[in-house]
Amino acid sequence: MSSLHVLLIEDEANIAKNIAEYMELKGHVFDFAVRGDQGLSLALEAYYDLVILDLNLPVIDGFEVCRLLREKASRHIPILMLTARDSIDDKVSGFNMGADDYLTKPFSLQELEVRCLALSRRHRLNTDTQIKLGPLLIDRRRNRVTRDNIIIDVSAMGFKILTVVAEAYPQIVSRSELTQKLWGDEPTESDALRSHVYQLRGVLDKPFDKPLLKTVFGAGFTLDID
Image (cartoon, rainbow, N blue to C red; front, side, top):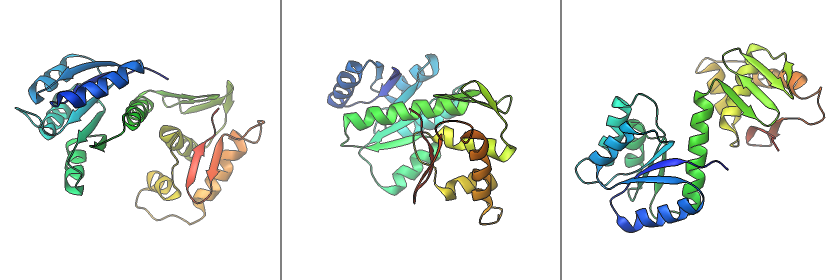
């Protein structure tokens, strides 16, 4: 499990202390800010894998910190909003300001770490030119797929399907979500996805001992990576 360099912007000392003690025992490195303006300055000056951002902050609140960070930062920094506000309106406002995830107080420290790791990993997968998962390597720049160092002759649609599922791993991608990402709002034949998935499996899985592309009944698709 990889360690993270995290900026925690939180003005409640007990919460900050609990998070830091738990996460640092897991090998993660933390920097701290208790005011919104301090946190914004640190986030713009240093390189962080992730920012954990409280909403109720002195000087500048979390919504404004998030907005300014998205406006001024030279790179996309994953932001996990941490707050006692649990209304749908607050969550929508947070996402509209550019937050990547949202966790309401009280929360489990274990869940916080899992969310942080997943968020950081998803960000790396979405920004790297290559996605490496076990024996599978997807090269976005070359539009090339290899498995066990063997080049797989996937179609353009098969490449898109595999990339979407790999970016979401280990989460499951539903059929409706996959259809939306492939075709948007344009109508398509009801069995088009089934046909493309079948063709993808023919080149990705059939020549090998173990299938990688897994159908989760009633849920969607994921990858079966050891």
